[in-house]
Length: 153
Image (cartoon, rainbow, N blue to C red; front, side, top):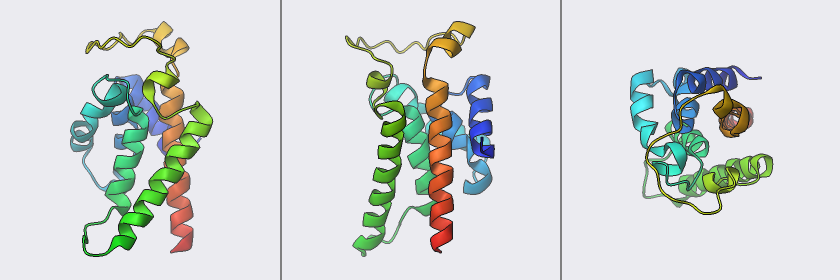
């Protein structure tokens, strides 16, 4: 288990949503204060505000990647293309492991009804939901992408 997986796990058990747990786990490399990271990623939990769209762990992973390797020069297409390729790689790896990168698919929700109220974090929650596995997979995949990128530079 990587240090970032362990930190994401710790944050998730403290009550962070999936996006916050992954994104804030990388504060040591993004340079963000934890409070800022938690606020920036808060709305992505539950697949964007519990809409069960793109998994919050994936959102946190890609947000951290953007902090590290995002582009700001809008005149050159190369950095945008490289960014999109990396995000696609990470999302596809996540989907290979978790079956999808869409929250409602991962949770096997068939008839979605919006409910903004999160379920209580009970022992049953942790034992029956795949969310912790998603958080840890996203952190590990990002660590591997960072390591692969650092080897190239």
